[in-house]
Image 1 (cartoon, protein in one colour):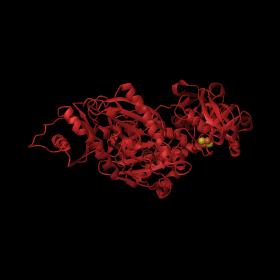
Image 2 (tube, helix red, strand yellow):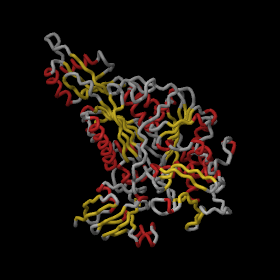
Image 3 (tube, protein in one colour):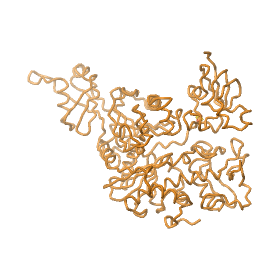
Image 4 (tube, helix red, strand yellow):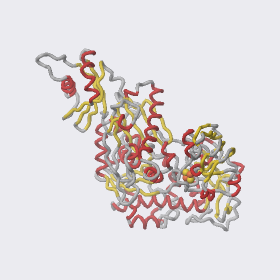
Length: 637
Ligand code: FES
């Protein structure tokens, strides 16, 4: 088979591949990220490329995704097209995966925040500073005939005066080193110890006092993005943070398509390799910037949804996706860095926050820890909304959770001009007197609309009565922005001359229908949980919004379209990347680790897929804001 060259424009990246390789695989090899919702199944049409030079062979069924004009101009689906020649291809703006605003910090939500900020504090709010892995400097008494216990026993005997444990294990590698280290350094050693829940494990023995070089990583393994924070375990300070797209996006945009890939054409190990590479790349950048030795990183705590947790451990996710939705594990075993291929100290311990069910993962547990709702008598509600909405309601006595499929609309897919929150995405919209005032991310020319822009848009269209409360356009209006394309009504937000692509950015009646379904699913899930525990919205002391979803939404508008419950605005708080905050809390406190397990055990998960009240609530929510006006007393269109 011939070796052929593929050049990707506009970046100009070149790659050599074997004849017959798909353009999708070639792009992956070249480090060019191409959109993919279906993971290369040929069903989403998101991986559009334009072949400018050379011959490529496309699967016939992909033709359905293009107009005759586009086919003539060389448009193909990357995943359904094989390289047969040296090629020059363009990745059009709408197919490019570009860096979105990644939320790399949580916002403390405790009613009594720590006196110092998280960046400088020795303690996370609510839990004492007591890292699950720590270095302890020991000055040991030299052996004598009267005291000739084994070398390791001399260490554990001294250690037991400083730490509490009922038994202490040691890795073989430490045991092999220990005799020489003790003698070479005149019985002065530093031991790195994992110590929590009454157990202890010695991970490393060094000569002399090295307690100033003691680091850990907190990791948010998101479906879309991965964030790694480097933390000083001696004082709790955050040294740096790095973030990137989850490289698993090559195998599908969302958890379902990645599971389909892992259980079909691919394997869980391919997905595991992708996420481990992600973490290694980000860690390498952090250690380079801070000039630390990766061997001094001896603990990593990760948080993610149940599917991401399975992939990090290389576990099969196949039963997660199918009824009755059974995870392989909800409490993940402690493993070492070398077991999963992380480039830090090989003996470093890896802990993952526990999951609750197939669709309630460690990220929800982390969110509950981060906002402190499980420590207070006051009842709170946590909403983390992406393609899936995860909801937790409760207090220090009880917690209930559920998850509902919100569809990809809020994440920027599934609508004609939907896109992620990257350069050029319309993120804010105001409509007054037929004029549309929009704001785009980084002031780029409009390329599409992201989740917050879509929420604004629906509210503004309803407020201006361009759409009715059923989401249908009022076709009796004489509005130049209201047009028909392929018999579907759509509203122009940005005219062709204003946009990057030269095509109008619009919102169609079908998009609005999909968004109403998405907001209806989120609201119906919250309402179902509130009803399940016999409460009303007025009894929710706090509504916490977590993740990228809450970062730029306009809360009053989100309430007005019936996405969020109609509570006092002051009770709605955005808590940022609470998955990362929760992971760091566990890294810095064995008590927080214990609390995470207690929280996960206490959560009662309501499976909504066969919960009749949810279906009824969902249907009642397919209206702006809702069929029952009494639920939204503050909303008046
Ligand atoms: Fe190619 Fe979905 S159609 S990735």
